[in-house]
Amino acid sequence: MNRRHFLQSLSALAAAPAWAAASPWKLNYMLASSMYGNLSLAEILPEVKKTGATGIELWPKKHGTQREELDAIGHDKFAEMLKEQGINFGGSTRYDLGPFGLSEEIKVVKKLGGSFIVTGGTGDYKVSPEQLKINVKDFVEKMKPHAALAAENGVEIGIENHVNNLIDTPDSLLWLADDIRDIPGIGIALAPYHLPQETKLLADLIKHIDQKMTLFYAWEHGMGCMKPMPKEEEIQQMPGRGPLDWKPLLAALKEINFTGPTEIFMHPTPRGIPILPTAAETTAEIVRAKNHLESLI
Image 1 (spheres, rainbow, N blue to C red):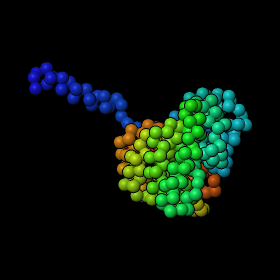
Image 2: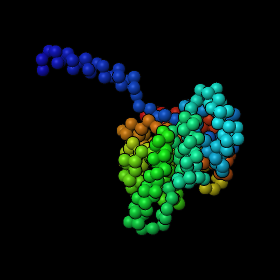
Image 3: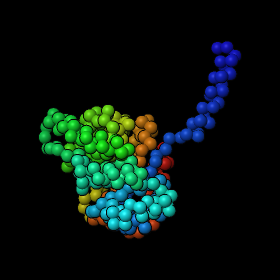
Image 4: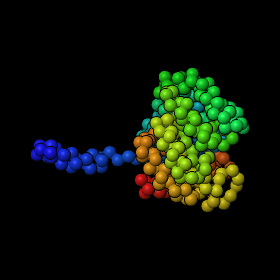
């Protein structure tokens, strides 16, 4: 190596750490309004920045009432409230509308500057693996015009893996990811809670989904969320409370350079109540979970 090339190499090496330090990979947090149950937008919006999130996603009944409140107060008023708090609108969860009924919601999300709508898959899932693979492909085919409408409006429809749903198993997620790979406007909202709590399986799924990840839920199964239980058991759905090792999942997210929204998440029982009794306690718990994740990155 001649002297000039040697000096150039040294210069590049010296510059690399400074560049890396300037642009570290990080999670980009979104706050799900359902974490605060049926509290009003006026109570929740001031909490968004405190949690480390830059924006809010709205949930409808039975998990929250904020999506209905948006329609009640009007879009312009909501936009003003967001501006006052210096936060963004991320999108909405609309299981109630289903994946084929999102035309009007797409317009609302676009108008407010949002980028995603989460919903579930639809189709017969109590079938053989061979038939399930065909049913996933059929579902994707039916979704194409809806995905096209979303893409035209700068919105992505995130299909969440959910129990008792077409997209429920690891295999169905793999097939969905493959079938939508080249289709704009549709992606996957990945919920580790609804999957086997095996870190390698979850990390491999993240890497397979790759750029089709619309949203990631920092949500583990813990003791579940389908029946009343002491709060210290219920809250084990939160990162750092339950047994799941988040480090391999975070490493996988970093590997695919996931910069979409991450929601620290859980469901309380009954639905429609904050995860902890007050807004302040709920915010503090989300911050604790965030700090746990940050400590592992």
